[in-house]
Image (tube, rainbow, N blue to C red; front, side):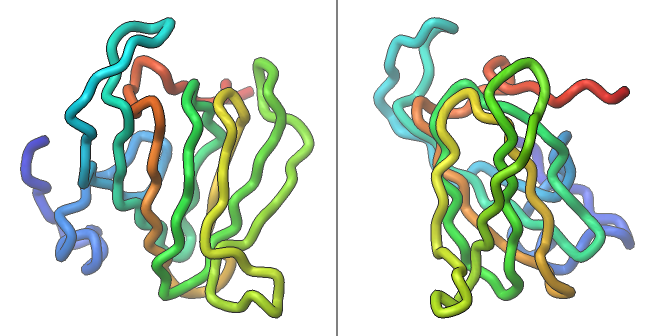
Amino acid sequence: MSAITATPDTPATARRLGLEPHPEGGWFRRTWTAQHPISTDNGQRPAATCIHYLLTPGEHSAWHVVSSDEIWLWHGPGTLELSLGGDGDQPGEAARSILGPDAAAGHVAQAVVPAGVWQAARPAGAEEVLVSCVVSPGFSFDDWRLASVN
């Protein structure tokens, strides 16, 4: 991955962590790739991958689907609303989780998105939020797609 070319619009946290714009929205950088490959229906993939993913207030992750299981791990400082919306050709009715620090308020520190389930995310408050996403089998843009825009 090439080094990010920071612009005046690049968030400070994205600069510090070397994050690049993500096609679905937000900022990301792969931080780990398992060294052992596995065979999938779509070819060889690493056993797992991990990214840092940042959303700032006003940004969101567009509805997308991945053909692997994904675990979202909250780092903060803000909270994140993770929506899951069906497993067909387009997102459907959404179930929501809030990733954050307040278990008494129903926040969770991690959430699982099963393979093939539509997902979208946005900050749930006024602060930026950093998460890590672990994907297994490892993430490939060949196994990912955005929802159609009508």
